Length: 152
Image (cartoon, rainbow, N blue to C red):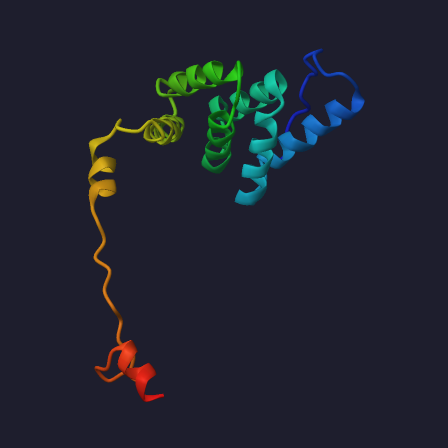
């Protein structure tokens, strides 16, 4: 996918930062899921510049995979950008594109599950105990471990 060049915001420190942002933006639109997610994760660490690129990818006319990676990056935002990222995800719920709404809804659901006690279904799963059973092997033929050791 050929992207139009991004206009520098003026916050970039030097040409290396501009090149890095352009490279990560290209990777965000990649056809490989791993590359998209890695680029989104790296963009989440770049504060305003990364936020602008992720917002553009989420709310623009982009493929679903790119939107999904952008929500991943927005979910991983830290510090003062966390609230802004949440507001963009909330804004995405009102978007005209169905894919954007679905991706934002899923991202908010994933964020909400991290809060303990938020969904009762998760509590039911945690409360269940697994039964530990002994698995017999063909060699034992009904003998216990002690009996096997005594005979050897």
